[in-house]
Structure formats: C-alpha cells, structure tokens
Image 1 (cartoon, one colour):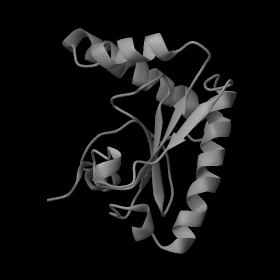
Image 2 (tube, helix red, strand yellow):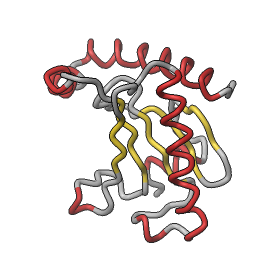
Image 3 (cartoon, helix red, strand yellow):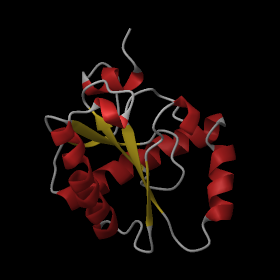
Length: 148
C-alpha cells in the first residue's frame, strides 16, 4: 500500500499542487502551521533524505529557493520562512516520505500559530481551511508562473 505522498504523486489522492517536475511535487500542507505552508515532496518514495540520489538532493535546495521567492512574491513570509525537514520518525516525521516544509512567518505570529493548531481539527475550521487553501494555491501558482 502506498504512503499518502506516493498516492498524491501518482494522482490517486487530491492535493493543492503548485508545481511538479521529474523529482518533486510542491503542494500546500493540509494541516498548515501558517497561511501558504508549502511542502516540497519527493516523487520517489524516500523515507530519509539520504535515500534520495545525490543529484536529486542537490536540486532540493534550489527548488526551495524558488518556492521561497514565490511565497514572498505572493506576500507570504516577507519577514522570514522556516525551512524544515523532519528526517526520520524520531525527528517528528509523521509521514515516512521525504518532504521539506516552507512555513512563512511574520513577527508575532506564535499566538495565531497555536490557535490554528486547535482550529484545524474542528469541522467548520476544516471547510474554511479548504477554501483558503484553494485561494492560496491559485495565488502561489500565479507567482510561480504555473497554470496547473
């Protein structure tokens, strides 16, 4: 049975995809820590960073740089962006498939961040979140020049 990211990469599960190439897909996190929380996901199943071929690992940072520029162009993360890889289960990796988080930040966002963690599990919050994710995906695709 495929993991969730393998199923998304194969088109068997829906996602708010922003970009894809031969090595990666870029999508919005369905449990975002902040608005426009982006994931760069390996298309190949690789539980750990070391499981990716060296050439693919090298392209990951270049793609993260491109995505950070798109986030900033769309108005997210102008004051900072967290880049995070949880590499393995002991590092809080919930899906055993390599993915890099880009989490746009702004000064004083910690209280809002904690509130979002609570609200995301409520049904009303999930419906609003889906509408917001759709709008953010369209905005970021425009910033990337992608028309998926």
